[in-house]
Image (cartoon, rainbow, N blue to C red):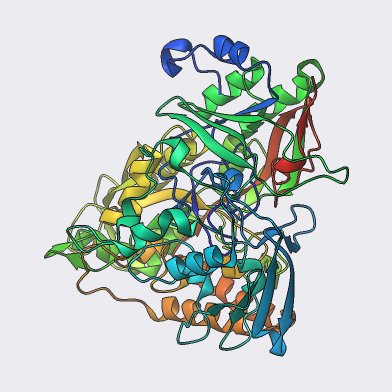
Length: 602
C-alpha cells in the first residue's frame, strides 16, 4: 500500500485499519483507550466535532515523519495527504489517472508522456505544475537523500534512472534506457511541492547533509505541511491523535460537479495496543478496525447489533516473517553482530532448522484462529506472479527431528541438559525483537521463543516501540533477529528495495544508507546476488509468462536459503461502521482506497 510510492515495500507495524492503495498495504494498528491512557475525553472530542462528517480511525504508534520521501514505515499519513501522477484502482488493480489526466506510451515502452490535469493546486492555493514533478524526481534520484522509493526505479543491470523532462506547461516526459515493465505503476510516486521544499534540498547542514533530511519532521506545525491529496494535516498531538481536514483545493469532483472528498475530517487516535483498538471499536469510538483473529468470532456475532460489517478480502497482500541478521560488517571497528552469533545466523542449515522448528499449524490455530495459512513466498498470494508450493516451492512442515538432524550435521551439539551449543561450546542464545502493542506479533514472538526452546535454543524475546524498532533495523543495524512484516502488492518489483543489494529495505543484510557511517567488510552471498540480478532482469521483461518464470526462481531461492523465514498469511479482515457509505473493500485496497468517494450517513 503506498503512501510512499507504488514502487516500494514498506515495513508495516500491524494490519488493522485497511490499506489505502499505494502499496502501503498495512496491517495498521488500533482501540478503547481509557481517559487516563489517552489523555483526552473521547466523548467531549466527539461532541466538539459533531457538526462535521468525520471518520475516526486508530494507529498503534505516532507518525515518524511528515515527509513522504523519507517515510519507511506503514501506516503513515500519506495516503490521505499526497498523490502521484497515477494511482491504483483498489478493485481491479489497474493503474488509473490521478494528478495526470492521461498518458501516452511510445517507442516500445521507453517513452511515457503524462498530461497533468488543468488547474491543479497545492493546499496553500499555489499552482501544481510540471516543475513540481521534475523537482520530485530530482529529489528521488538524489543520492544524498535516503528514500525507500528510489530502488523501484532502477533500470537494467547498471541501475539507471529514467530521464524526466518538461515538454510544456502540462506535459512531462519519462525517457527510459530500455523497456521497464513496472514503470507506469511506479508513477504513483507522491509529488511534493517545489515552492516549499526546493530551498531545503539546495541547502546543507554543518555535516554537509541536505536540510531536506530534517524538513517536515513531526515537530513541524501542521499548517506548514503543503499537500496535494484529499486531506491536509490540521493537528498532531503526540501520543494522542492526528487530525486531517478536507483539502479545499483537491482536484476531484463527482459526476454532478460536487467537490470531493465528502468526509470533512479524519481523526487518527493513537492507541497503545490492538486490544485497546478492539474495545474502542466495540464501544463506538472508532469507525473501522482491522479484525484480529482472536476477536473475529465475537465481532461476527455483534455485526447486526453493532451496525457494522466485517469485510473479508481473502488472503492478505503482506508478509509475516522471522529474520536473522546476516550482516557480517563492522562500523567504526565494532561488528554489527556478535561474530559468534553471526556464524550461526549465516548458516543455511541453522536457518532451515529454525524453520522446521516453528509449529505453523499451531500458530494458525491458536494465534490466527484458523484465519490464515502457512506463508511460503515473499510475493503476495493474490499476485499473478505468486508460485504456490505445488510448483516445487520448498516448504517447512513442523519437524523437530529434522531440525535437530540439520543442526548436528552442521556441527552443533547438545549438552546433558538438552541445551544447544555450537562447535566451540557456546550456548545458542539470541534476542528476538518485534513491535510492541501488536498482539499478533507479540504472540508470534512468544510462540517462536517456546518452539525454539524445544531445539535447545534460548530466545530472549523483546517487543519494542515501532519507531524504535525501525531505527534499529534501518539506522544502527545492530540486532539479532526480528519478527515483522512487509507491505505487498500485485507487482513483484515493488519489492526491489528489499532484494537489491543496496536496497533501502534489504533488512536481513542492510548496507549503510546515505548520511550514515559506512560499513566495513559488508558482503553478499551468491544466492543473494542471484535474487538481486533476477529482480533487475524481470523488470526488463514485458512478457508476463517469462516474468513469472523469473519470479518463480526467486521464490525457490528465498525458500531454500531463508533470508526471511515466512510464517502465516492471514486473511484481510476489517470491520467498518455501516454509516460509512461507499466502501469497496479488497485485500489490495482495504476499506479506504477510495476515500474521496466515502461518505458518512447522519
